[in-house]
Every structure is written in structure tokens, then in C-alpha cells.
Amino acid sequence: MFQQRLRAALICALLALSSGCLSSGGGGGSAPAPTEPSASRAGPAYLQAIGIGVSDLDAAVALYRDGLGMTERQRLTRDNRIEVVMESADKRGSLVVLMQFTDGVGRNVQQNPGKLAFYVKDPAAFATAFATAGGRIVVPPAPQPSVGNVVVGFGRDQDNNLIEIVGAGDATHSYLSAIGIGVSDLEAARDFYVATFGFEEDQFLSIPGQYDEYILTSPVPGSSALVLMHWTNGAPYDYQDNPIKLELASADPALLADDIEDANLPVNQAPAPSSDADLNGALVGYAEDADGTLLELRRSIRPYLAGAAIGVADLDAAVTFYQDALGMQEVTRRTRDNRDEVVLRSADNKGSQLILMGFTDGEPRDYDRNPGKLVFYTRDPSAFAQSIRDAGGVILVEPVDQGPALGNAVVGFGRDLDNNLIEIVGDDSATESWFGAFGIGVSDLASAKAFYADTLGFKVSLFLPIPGQYNEYILQGYGGSALVLMNWTNGSPRNYTDNPVKLEIGSLSPEGFLETIDDAGQRVDQQMSEDPSRNDELVGYARDADGTVLEVLLAPWGQTAP
Image: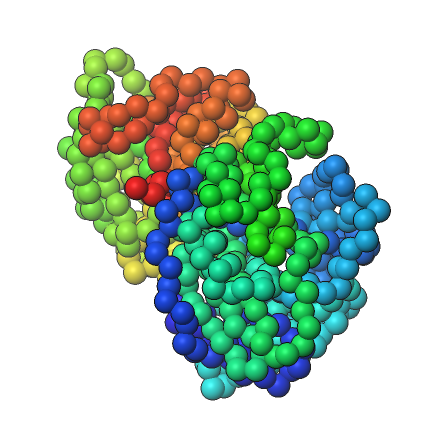
């Protein structure tokens, strides 16, 4: 946050020198009193996408692809427009929807008083690519020594939308960090978006003689910030009915529509299955804010891997091993209907929890044939491998540098007391070690990827073939460790069915998550109900096509307001 505010202060200084530019930052100002926390009955929403009208769809797609590094995800034919959905190079932040209207209604796409802010790894290269692809650089990116040499620049796309370029060390290439919209009444707009959608006020910024703005964030992770901007420089700005839309996703869009009506703003269409053929019956509603900005209300089940569970033959021995060998710490113990569970967290307290399951029902289970893996990131891979060996585990491959082709990553492999594969990956940012990914074996890799990514909403990070060993998809939820889908290609027999493993999945909408699984033709064993072993937390159960148990929970950021 401190680094972001340094960038914001710097941007203010640059804007004072750059007439006509818009920005995501400014110097400190006196903000009106903040609003109370959200009273929304729908719980928190998040900004799934920003839609912007464009004059030439093909040219806009080319510029956002070649100039901003974005990837086209899909094309949609809607009732009055064609949309192209674009995703940032780093697959982070909200999506950008380029909209070309087909209804013949005249719209001015050149006067949007907002902006798109990109955090980028290499601002100079980013600006060059943008200009080469047809964009216009207004302020070339340059380091600013007074604020830690943060690099900032500005450009405009072919429809005059402001593109903000900010150097960021956490970017691999680039990602959309913030989306700005112009509003005629800044405080009223803030109150509406905070109270109705559960956004949280992060910062108020003021540039004297230029503009004031609020930066709002969602408690639901993974989306870009929403910036509300009001200009004070005396120039005329049209805040009304601009050809933009905000796609706002929540667990219950119907309740969200009720909250919008309670704010005395119009709901043009109550959330209902869409008649647009390309949306496949997705639940969609429409409303407007006070300036006529279109609000498209969507349902979301946004998931993450809260915990990964493995069955073990000797629970006490497994707990000791994971503590001594891998530096994990015990969080709690649970007695479930057919098993005892010990919940562990990583030494660095990052990633998902690891749950060791000792079954008590007498049913035979094959603990040492699990075709998956556990991936640990560690500061000292060699010492980590030795600790595995010292605790009774086996090291199959000593950690070694994999060379330039794999970014000089240091990787090794071992096995725990139950023969589970442990992948060791060097990570200079780790303090000690952390549980970074959990792999499950799947009999049909393409079908499993379609289920977990296309149906349940995990994001595909990488497809990785290991010749003569296995192929895998690395998926990322919105928090926690990565989920890895693995199918072995080395010819040895693997049992992918009904292994003693479990995925604890947190969701913005657990009920919607189970409904989605049922609609996909997979098995739902239990709807959401209170579980005494988890302090009466609501828990549901389902299975994937290979019988892997999915324990479905309400994500912490999915809690509805009291």
C-alpha cells in the first residue's frame, strides 16, 4: 500500500504538468467523512469487467492486444452491441470489454472522463509497444528519483481513453490495476458504491485545480480498483450516459438489484437468465448509477483452494513428519464423521492449509498410490531436502538449477511417509517455506481442466508437459495455493479414482457453486448445512468425475453483512 501511495503522489505531480491528462493518483487532500461499512443485503460485489465503447472494434482489439499485451478471451453478440472480452497479460485484475454498438444510436466514445491504469514490468517497452500499435504517448514513462524511481507515463488509445502506465516490480508483464469513471457528485457516488456494493474506501486524493477522486476496492480478491473521478479544473466534462458499463458480480444479483432500488436508482432489468445466445442463459440484470453508467449485474461463485487434504496411514507420524520435515504448524484438530483431521499451515503462513486425514471407519484405503503431489516453495531448497530426509522421507531428485529454459528455477523431488510426491522449488522471497500448490491426478486432463476452469472458474495459469512423465494444468483460484491437474504419461499404472484426497474450496456463493456442479452433471453429495465439527459452519460436499471429494465452504470475503 505504501508503494502504491508513493506512485499516486508522483502521478499527481506529473499531472499538474500535463494538461488534459487523467490519473489514478494525487496528493493528500481533506476528504469528507467516510461512509459506514456496507449494509448491502447481497454482501460484497466486485468489479468483474469494465466495458468501453469504441468506434472501430477491430482496431481497438488490435491496439489492446498488440499495444497493451492483452489477450482476447471471447466474442459476444449482445442485443445492441458486439463485445470482445480482453484479459491482462498477467491474468490479474478485472477484464476489459470492448463494445461496438450495432443499434445505430449515436454515441460519443471520445469524451470518457475516466481512465485505465496498467501496472507494468517494463514501462519503456510497454509504451513503445503501445505507440507502435497505434496508441499515443502523452507523457513518456520516466523514473522519478524523489519517490524511489517509480516509473510513470501516460497515453491515449484511438478513442481518447487515458491509459496510465506505472512501473511495478510485482508484474510479470502487465495487469489492469484500476478503472476510473467520471461522476458528477463525488461524495454521493462514493456513498452509493460503498453502501450498495460493499466496496471499501481505500484513499481520497485531490489535485488542486485538476480533480478529486476516491479509490475504492472490493473485499473480494482478484479485481481491479474502482476509481471515482470528479474534475475541478473548470473544463466541461460530460458525466452523463457515457458508453461505458461496469460488470459487477456478487453471490446474489437479485438482492443487489433490490439494494440499488432502495438507493432510488433504476433497475432496468431484474436479474434473470439472459436471452443473449452467447451468454448461455447466464443470470444477468441491468441497472444504472446516478450518472447513467450502465451496471451489468452478474452472479459469481468466485472460488479458491482453502485447504488440501490427504489421507495418511498413521496420523500422529504424519503430523510429526510435516512439522519436522516441512516446517508446518498445527492450527486445529477436528473429529469428522469418518475421520480425524489435523489442520496445518505453512511456516510462512502463506498458501492453502494442509489437512492430514486419519480415517476411523475401518474402510480400506490405498494411501501410498496417490497420483498427485504437494509443492513447497522454500528459501533454501538443499536444507529443505535434507530436513525431509532427516525426518524419514525420501529424496528422489536433489534440488538443482533447471537452467535458462525454466528461468533457472531450483527444483527437486521427494516423498513423505505415505509415498506422496513432494516437489521442492527455490523461492528467494520465502522466509522459510510455504505450501504453493496441490496436485491431484485426473484420468482425463482436458475434461478436468474444463470442469475446474471453464465451469468452476479457476484460472488457467500454465499448461506444462513433462516429456515421458506427466502433463499438467496449473490453475489458480482467488487466494490460497494453486491447484494442479496431473495426468501421467510414463506408462506406469495409476489409480485416478476415489483416492483419499479432498479439496476444501471456499466460494463467494457456496450454494451457487454446488448448483454449478450439479448443472455440469457431476455429483453433489450434500447441500450446504451446519457442521458441528466446524463450529456449525455451513458445509457442502460434491465430487469431480474421478471421485475426488470437494468440501465446499463460504469464503471469508463472501460473508454477507449482518
